[in-house]
Image 1 (cartoon, rainbow, N blue to C red):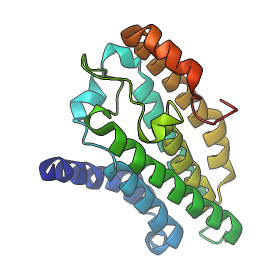
Image 2 (image 1 turned 120 degrees about the vertical axis):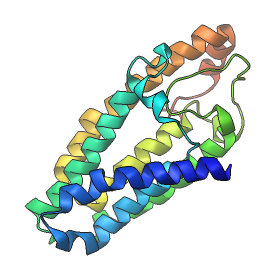
Image 3 (image 1 turned 90 degrees about the vertical axis):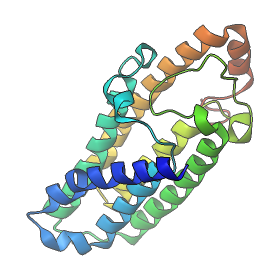
Length: 217
């Protein structure tokens, strides 16, 4: 367990220079911005809450994945980078809307809490790519008692916090029109894989529960 955490820690601090430090190098004052520090911390915690995923799984995902992992990675990066760049270079760190910042913090708290609950419930069955094990059961405990995809809901809520923290209109547009469709595609692909593996048992489960939002979807 400690070994896997060390690997995750290394992954995080391998990517931070590329995702946060490099884009902000021309504007060093941004490194002390509370918004930048907060958004970076959210990204780090988000990653550390999940089980370790070997790089090979990202580079060569199972055929069941149907490139959904890449769509998610790209859409999440777009939301993060565009929000941060717009806040730093367009608004020159000067835009301060406490209400939006407060909403962002609340979304981050809710999203990360649900993610911790979801990943703990899934345990070693949680994977960054769509990969089903032969002995894998249909998870019905924890948040999965109420929703079929609480981990994806937690990811979307966490991602939504970023454009709010940076008060970024373009980030919000990308969240709505790029990131949400990417997650809906991912859910569609995963449910196809689950039906293929579990058949009628999962179809019955689908009739009894909601995907993401009770009474809505």
